[in-house]
Structure formats: C-alpha cells, structure tokens
Amino acid sequence: MKTAKQKRLKNKKAYALVLALVAAVVLLLLGAGLLYICYGVRVRAAKLKRETIAMLAAEAGYEQAIFWMSQQTDILGELENPTSDAFGTITFDNSYCDYEIRLHDFIGARPVFRILSTGYSGALNRVVDVFVVQKITGWDMGMCRIPSGMTSTEPVFFANGEIINIPIHINEYDDSPDYRDIYITGSPQFLQKVEMGESKLRADDSDKYSGVMGLFTDGIYFDQPNVRITDETAVQSKVERFRKSIIDAEKYAFVLTPVGTADVPNPHSAVQLEFFVESGVGKVRITNNCTVQGYQRAISQDYCIEPGSGGTRYIKYDIYAYHYKPDTEASVTYTINDETYVTQVFHSSEGPIYSDPGGQIFVDGNVVIGSQDYEDMIVKGKLTLVSTGNIWIADPITVYGDRTDGIPAKDNENVLGLIAQGVIKVIDPGLSGYSAGGINYYPGPPQTSVSDANILNPTTHSYVPVANAYGSSLIDRILPDPMIVEAAITVGGGGWGAENVAKQTGFTTYGGRKENPPGTNEQDYLIIVGSITESVRGVVGLVNTDGYIKRYTIDERLLEGVLPGNIWFGGKYVPAPAGWHDYRIKD
Image 1 (cartoon, helix red, strand yellow):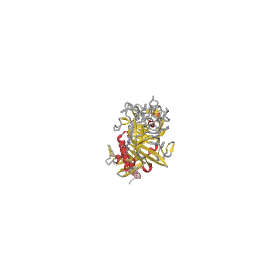
Image 2 (cartoon, helix red, strand yellow; image 1 turned 90 degrees about the vertical axis):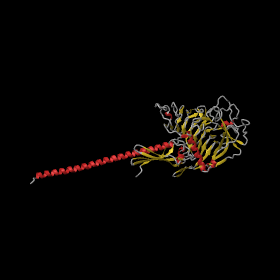
Image 3 (spheres, helix red, strand yellow; image 1 turned 180 degrees about the vertical axis):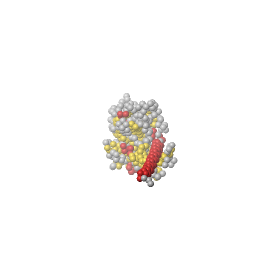
Image 4 (cartoon, one colour; image 1 turned 120 degrees about the horizontal axis):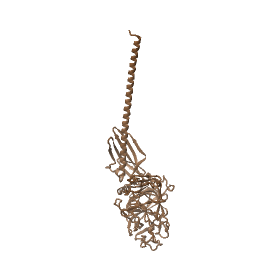
C-alpha cells in the first residue's frame, strides 16, 4: 500500500507534465502566431513592393506619353488620325505598363488631354490618370537673337530701365562656346519667372548665370522643353487646321485671299481690318484686295525667315510704306460676336468634342490693321486673326471692357489673337509723308506739294491713310506715344517688333522712324498687354538711340483658354489643377 508521501510525489509529477504540455502548446501556438505574423508581413511587404513597382511602371508610361506629346507638330490632328500611335506598352524586367492619350475636353478653346497609364507587377496594378494642358508661358522665343544677314544673327539685349512683367521662355541656342542664351545690359527688371531651354552650367560645370541671378524676381527654370514655333511644319499644320475649321463652319466670308492690283513699286496684296465699337456692339470692317507699297532700306534690321529654309536663312523683306484700295472695292462691316464666331470640333472615337465659340478670320496674304476714321482700334468680342503673310499694325489696339490696374480684368471676355506665318510689326507711318526721289528716297505717295492733301492716286485706286493725322496733309501720319497693343501675338516667320527703327544721321530730311512729336530725340514707349510667341527676336528699338522702349505685361486671361482658335506652340504639357489621380483597379 502506497504511502501518502508517494501519492503526493506522483501527483506533482503529473501536474508538471500537464504544465509542460500546456507550456508546449502555448509556445507552439505563439510560434505559429509569430510565423503567421511574419508571413503576413512578408506578404504585405511583397504586395507593397509589387504595388510600388506597378506605380513606377505606370508613371513611366505617363512620362513616355508626355514625351510623345511634346514631339507632335499638331497634337489634335495626330489624335484625330485613326492610325495614330498615341498609345503604347513599355516592358521592364519585373513589370510593364500600358498607356494611351486622348482629348478629354476643352477649357474655353484650350484643349485638355487625358493620359491613362496602367502599371502591372505580378497580379497587382496601379493606375495613373492625369488631365494635362499645354503650357502657355507669356513670351516665348525661338532665340533671343535677331537676324543680321542671310545666315547670321546677333544678340538682342534686355536693357537697363526696361520692365518685363511677363513670364519668358527662351529655346536652347546650342552655341559653342556656351554663353548665356539671354542677353542683358545694365539692370532690367524681370518681374515674373524665366524658363531657359539650356542648362545653368556649362559642360565644365562653370556657372553661366551666377552674375545675373539677382535680376530675376521669380527665379529661372533651366532645361525646359523647346517651344515649337520654330518648326515650320508645326506652324503650317495649325494654320491649316484653323482655316479648315472656318470652312467647316461655312463661314466663307472670313476666309479671304486678297489680290492687289494697284500699279505701285513692290506691290503686296493685303486685307485692311478696322476694329471699333458702335452702339455697344463690337464690329470689324474688312476691305479686301488692297495693295501695299513695299519698301526696303539698304541698312536696316527688317528681316524675316526665308520660307522653306527651316529657320536657318533670313531675307530682308519689304516693310509697309502705305496702301491703296480699288475704287470698286466696298468695305464690309460685320458684328464680331454674331457673325465671325466658330466652334471648333474634334472628332474622337467617342464622338465629337466642341470648343467654346470664338471669332476666327483667315487671310491668305497680308493684313493691315488701321484706320483713318478711328484713332484707336477697339476690339469687343473674342477674335483670332491668322495670316499666311505679314500683319502690319498701324494704330493702337485695345480691348473693350472692365480693367484692373490698366489691364483687362479677369472677367473681361474681350480678347484678340494675332497669328502670322510672316512677321507682325508696328509700321512707321512717317514713310507715307515723304515723296520718292529725295535724299533718302522714301516711298511716299505722289503729291503736288508736301503740304497738299490732294493725293495723286494710281488710276481706279484710292490712297488709304492709316495711323493718326499729324499736320495739315492727309499723308502726314504718326503713331501715338505710348503705342499700345493688347493682343496675343504669334509670329511664325520672324519676330515681333517695329519697322524702320534706325535713324540715318547727317540728313536734315526724314531719316528714320518718326517719334511723337517729330523732331524729338526721345524714344517712344511700346506697351504690350498680352503674350508673344516669336521664332526669332524682332527689333523694337536701339538702346538709348531710336525706336521704342519696351513695357510688356502678361494678360493672364490668355493662360486660361480664353483665346479662340486653338493655336499654341508650347512644347511642355503639365497637369491641370487637381488633374492627377492614381488608384488600383479593383478585382
């Protein structure tokens, strides 16, 4: 018979065994739990890694789409093309992506594009869905240089005292040795940001900009995509698209091909446009089939790009002297809002997409904007004018409506766009006030005397004075000081500026641009409120000598798609506000 002591010992051993078994089970469960947790962490880490890889792949597709867009001459035309390669696949070692580009909508007349890129890594995916718009700068330059000969250019300097209150972009010049592509003398004021196509550093890592950075209030952005205004194919494509949209809308009265028939030296066919407001209604008066007397000075800066040269050769063109209209040619007046408005249509696989309506006028030839009836051209309505030749500005141009600090207010709906495949220049009205044969051989219209307003015209044609009258003679004209132009200016065949800016010294008769008033030595002011896009720089004035002093200010409404006609040449596309979205496709 077991003793009580033996029974107690046996029970203790049993309890120990049970505790050991319980502990083993607990440890086993704990270990299994830890293993499960570790496995879950690894699974989640692997999933997160896959999602990250998928996201990077999707972003790579987005970047490729942006690059593709920047290479197109006419992005809208390419997206309408059924064989367009506006989509693609990129394959990586552990992932791939599919992307596509399409037109989503218009903000006003400004296209909004949608880039949809889906990245895949294993069974996981991430989507980048972005709405992008073409970057609009303010003042875009193919180069900050003017033509000085058939194949040569020279720098244009921003001068001491100039105030440049407009964002600037300058394409890379690719010069060697490598100098700054923006040229500065003294201390001009750059009040808004500047973008450069070139890098800040040279190949040897020396800094080209260290001495001038303090002049740029909003800084400089380097290595930016070039603007495509220097691409003749891109310009032609957009111009043709503009013309076709008017014809498709059956607005045939606003597709004009002038024929000049006046017997004058160096004739050029042109259309004359006059903008005015009558009884609160914005109107445009059109006179077709005018003849411009062209004129060239032996020594001048009046160059344009030679057509077909790819922007590598330049020619001296005939500047505006004066013009005639046929006696049988009736001027026709249209209301801008009611009669010139066109809605551009984009034909997509998902159906038509429409822009906001706006006025469009196309001239296959030259244009003169000026009047003898109105001292200023006032534009009421939204209107874009495209010319395959030159646009000559012979009077101040302003837009109607509310203003803030002298600039059209944000809610002002009136705007003018000027696009030329030639040049856009402010004329020298003084040329019409002097007869040919004098010491400077200026091409004024024939007259009985300097003071006589009786113009002896070519048979069946009438002389058309433009700019403001000065003195007693009809031919004695002058531009005001300051000269104001409120417009979005786009120049495909050269630069924006003024014609015949340099005086010839040593003569007592007319020797160059007529200042206001004539005979003074002070330069006038040229005020731009709007935007400028130009292939090369045009001459505005000669520093401290002749021509104009610049005062340029951005019209920020132009950055928001208010301009009709769909003509922009920026090479950069950026997300629209709140336009970026990324997510997973749910199973």
